[in-house]
Amino acid sequence: MVSGIVIVRFITTSGTMNRRSYKIIVGIALLIGLLFSGCESQLTQEAGFLEGVISIGPICPVETDPPDPGCLPTAETYKAYPVSIWTSNGRRKIAQINPALNGSYKTELIPGNYVVKLGTTNNGIGGSNLPAEVTITSQNKTILNIDIDTGIR
Image (cartoon, rainbow, N blue to C red; front, side, top):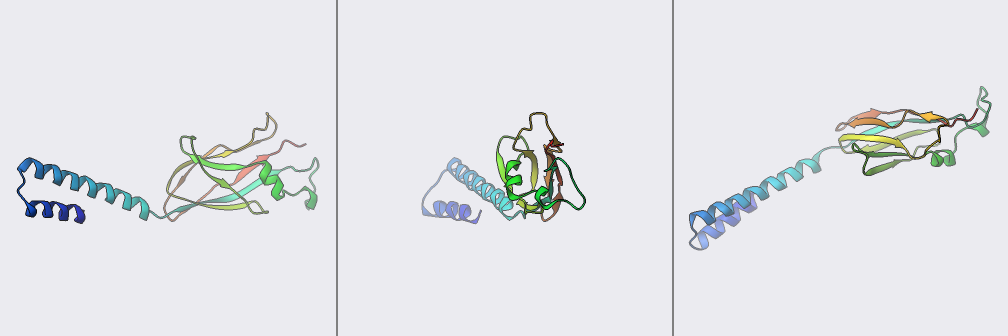
C-alpha cells in the first residue's frame, strides 16, 4: 500500500494532473494494496495436520493371536492400497499418504476442507471407511483412522 501512495505522490508532484486521472491512479494503488494484503494473510496462515493409523487386513485367510509376522502389512501392502488427499470438490489431488510400517501417518496441510480417498477399487470385495471428508484448522491436528478390509477370508 505504501508503494502505491509513493507512486501517486510522485506523479502529482512531478507535473499537472487532472482530477479524473488522479482518481484512477488512487484506485489502482488501492487495488494493488488490497491484492497484496490478501496474499499476505494466506501466506502467514499456519498449517494444520491430518494424522492417524491405516489398518489393512486381513492379509492372510486365518488370523492368529499374536499375529503371524508374515500376515502383517508391509510397505508393499500400503502401496497396493494407496490413500490420497483431494480438494473438497475431488478434482485435484493434494497429497499422497505414506504411512510408516505400523500404519501411522502425519501429513501437513493448509487449513481447509479435504476429501480422503482410497486409490484402488476393490470390485465389491472388502471395503473401507473412505472416502471421508476432513476439515483442517490452523495449528491443530485432525485424526482420521482408516480401515481397509482386503476381503480375504
